[in-house]
Image (tube, protein in one colour):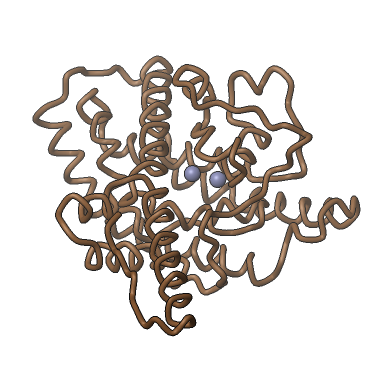
Length: 309
Ligand SMILES: [Zn+2]
Ligand SMILES: [Zn+2]
């Protein structure tokens, strides 16, 4: 099946904007949440989207030849254009998206890019635009190489990735409740609200792109509980609307930790351990400096700055 996803996305732009307008109007009318939209947050999200688009266009120039090489030399299958090949491509890419997304929450190197999507404390359609220009550096493109090996040409790989991301725009809203039987099949607003929450029972759950079956199969599914509304944002909050700070703060923090810790085991942890490692390490540092402050206040003048993790 031939399709031009870039054209499709361009055609969908008015729908995205209409959704944002409807949601802002709906929230105001229902007075459901005065904090749903703020100009500064939405402008930051828009700037991040434009930066991401630019970086993505550039990255495809380097990445498409890699897919083309894998497709030309190592593909295992040949597909006839049609619905069957489209469905196989769609399901395979959605599974790979699940793997990429789960890794992005469990490996700090990937989290350094993905954190941008999660660092807003608001949840609305414009949150979907909140992306990182560093995804190509983090290596998101590597996760789609199996599609080339399965026998799909680069143009179709790029197309299906864009379609998956376009679908995900619609799950970033607080204005839609649960959707009945669809909750068993698709990623829905309720399922994705849980994904953006930092509550203990919700954190690192619901990694779905389009199909939620992967979360249900691999044990990462949690249902939204009306008695526990999601608290949006990240464990170590980012107090800025500056898109450059939002893009690079975790990379800077990771580099700083890499230099500061002692031993290669800790250095590798600073780059590749789950993000919780960093939160724990930073807490241990501030605990050590608190202890050190207390000692100095007591006039003992001794430091207890143990950087080991
Ligand atoms: Zn995520
Ligand atoms: Zn999201």
